[in-house]
Length: 223
Image 1 (cartoon, rainbow, N blue to C red):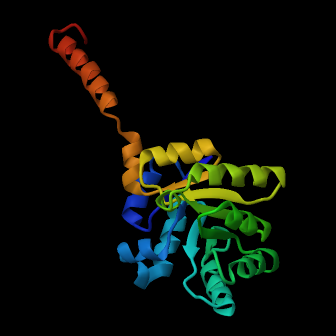
Image 2 (tube, rainbow, N blue to C red; image 1 turned 90 degrees about the horizontal axis):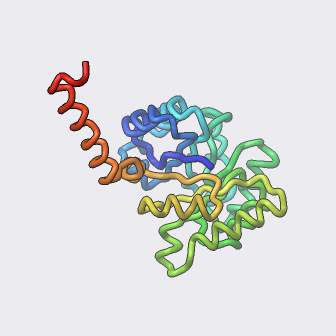
């Protein structure tokens, strides 16, 4: 299992990479626009690659097969070893995925998936990663853990190469549930990663221990 960081904010990524827990990064057009990175996409993505030293997903925004393939080649050329092309599910997604993976040797992450059916087809098409959207599946009234577990069982049984990335994480419990359901990777925003580190009982315990130590030191009992 692994944790990716779901962000294009270079400063935040640099801070959290120092924790030693990040294996890769995911971005999408919404995140890039919110972080003000759209106008300097290549610069931002190459900086992220250098920081995480692992797979970095960059999403296609074109909508026809030929245009998507051309854009994918452009993105992959920035760093073919680390850049993963995010292909939104639907339309020409499977054709694009198959062409990138089988003919061009470019890694893909088929994204925006809400069902087992979608994930299974993407895995069969040769995707390196299949991204299941935890929070958005919940919004529809379905159980995302069931989708993750079914997809993982299928991948294992059929010996497919795809790894599950669970995104659309909104609460720290989403991370726990996704990993326990069988997700290979969970991609998490910096605010939620920081919440995962914090617990009020831990803070109280540390404060208690440190106070006892200080009191004993002030009394001269510790030198």
